Image (cartoon, rainbow, N blue to C red):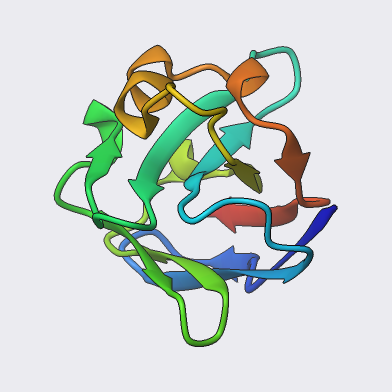
Length: 132
């Protein structure tokens, strides 16, 4: 099993920046992974913010964060990051990292295109981001 632990959340002023991290540990069961950041506010479904394929580095972003957020992965330390710049009040949410190792024959590009949380099998506990 893979364990994910997020950190880096907090309260910031609008226009500020924040860097979230997600440390992965446990068994490695695939040569590449699809990883993503989701966010959720009460009463709303979980929204995929950004996704990355660890093998190729291909990324995908929600329209609302393009140009402001950057997702990256460092294989040397098994850590996923989300760099958030020019934060807005509407970015306030609980942020979660997620991971899936696609079964043989399923490509990460397909997983990313679906943009839904049900595609991911491992989740962190979440870290709160509040922008005022």
